[in-house]
Amino acid sequence: MLPTHNLEDEIHQMKQNSPKLMLKTVLTRLLPKKLVELWIEQGFIQDEVIANLSKVRLKNLLDLVHHWQFIPNGTEGYRTAEVTMGGVNTHHISSKTMESQQIKGLYFIGEVLDVAGWLGGYNFQWAWSSAYACAFGIGGKRELRKI
Image (cartoon, rainbow, N blue to C red; front, side):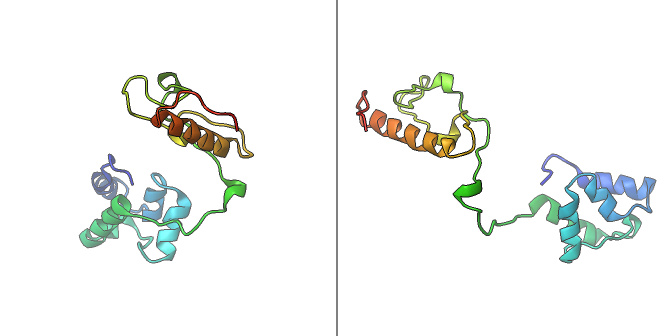
């Protein structure tokens, strides 16, 4: 997290300007409060006055912030699944074959395209329908059969 943020310099500056600040306060200015609280609760960091933050603990903190990873342990399934916005502009894609109009032989389907539907299965249908059109496009068929 915070790949372009120089947290080390910021903490050094705060140690000089506001040495009585608590580490939790500093971190919650940059990260979600619940994440910082979880790190404290699980012992990854201590909520201490930043003036007392040693070089070793600062290095550990920087490693944690910049290299922290989490692995999702599941989903709530189709019932609550949602789509994200953004993606390849559909104006540059053939709607019949899903092939790029700029790079022949390059195809896009589903959520990689800038298409979003209402909740209720529309996005799944878009993923399946665009894949169907793409399959025929790749197969060289220009007309889709009715199903």
